[in-house]
Amino acid sequence: MSHFLSPIATRTLSPADAAADVQAGARPSPAADPDRLLPADPGTRSIARELLARVEGLPIISPHGHVDAAMLEQDTPFPDPATLLVSPDHYVTRLIHASGVPLERLRVGGTTAVEPRETWREFAKAWPLFDGTASGYWMRDSFEHVFGLSREVSEENADALFDELDAKLKSPAFRPRQLFKEFNIEVLATTDDPLDELAAHKAIAEDPTFAGRVLPTFRPDAYIKFAAAGWAERVERLIDTAGDGIGGYEGYLRALENRRQYFVEHGAVSADHGVRTAQTLRLEAGTAAALFDKARRGEATAQDADVFEAHMTYQMARMSVADGLVMTIHPGVFRNHHTASFNTFGADTGHDIPFAVSYTEALRPMLEDFGTAPGFHFIPFTIDETVFSREIAPLAGFYPSVFIGAPWWFLDAPDAMLRFRAAVTETAGFSRSSGFIDDTRAFCSIPARHNTSRRIEASFLARLVAERRVSEARAQEIIVDIVDAAPRRAFKL
Image 1: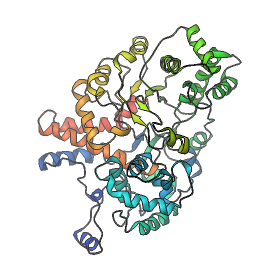
Image 2 (image 1 turned 90 degrees about the horizontal axis):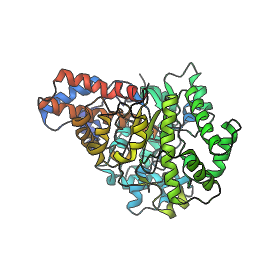
Image 3 (image 1 turned 120 degrees about the horizontal axis):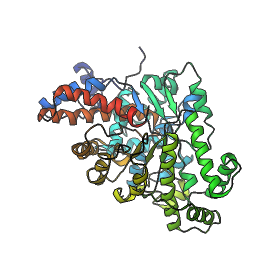
Image 4 (image 1 turned 90 degrees about the vertical axis):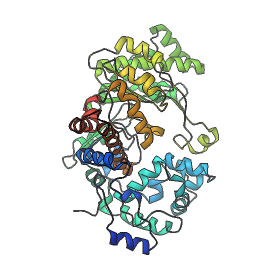
């Protein structure tokens, strides 16, 4: 038995331990409570406990995320606590920045003028800001159940906790492969450039000592969005590499098809698309080719870019019908909202902001042609929760191809998860959802995120049981389906 505190289990403090902590000035973490996130009503909570017990020990299925496969292939030791847990997590840095702390103090975007310990001190000082947030919940859970921290984070104990974490991160027990095993991960999907050779995935798949599947995901955004930095050069390389000697727009489509097939051969099950909107369009080949050539000349407008992206979303659906890759879309984000921060620190540094998205009319061209195609799986995600009951659930309640994407990004929080489940279930039931996705780069938070989802599902189902809307026996079957069968079904695992 290792020192590791299983993220699937719970740890409770004995009265003696709790008293000792209080005497030492420490406050027991709420994450130590086995009833965290379960209903406050005792009767409903008792039902939720039984439901949670059915799924808390099931393996983690993570079909969409952003962990680097090379980290697992090479078993790269984690860096210091600030570099691992603070600087790359824009959920964390954005809120600290909102309180007035410059991003460079948080070492965002690879800035190194500030020492990691100084960044950790900024984080510890800001820790009270995270009360009530999803980020605070996940981090507190990870500190308790992954790292076994001796006390709650505070400005006063920042240095002591930095040293405690740093020592653990330097130990063999906290290497990525060991944690992958301890986290009970069965499937972990990464997000990959279409021209990636997938060497790390190949090495992992051929390694008999590695238990579990690490799957690549085809993510072609940088080859579709005209405004992406280096788009023209990237597209030239794509056509030269995989276009079968065909030039222009035709060679571009052929190259995308060939690279998708390469991903399939290396274990991929899905293609992911960070589209600006959910719009789909079916353009004539000549019209699409003219837009493509216009962009290569550097003459395309923003409107041209939107039209071409909508057309390529349609084309990606066509390709998914042909090659079997599950198609997921993540629209509705104004990327890099603050230009000065983007220019200094780069993308994914905390200033991506949601906007409202329409799905019903936008998806119709694509669903008209492919919505009932055998074997096509399409998963729309959203961070506009107003569309859950109005658009996405009704679409999934008719089209065999459509599965409801789990709450994502700003919505993958306890209360938002409950709102999601209430919004979609009355229209589409439980069987049409994708299962939980953690969508994270923060490897050590994966068990906390999945455990959160399991607790929320137990809480929602417990209420239905208490209200005599679902039998307890049926709820026990449903929660296993939600946690384990749904992601396997939706992502063709």
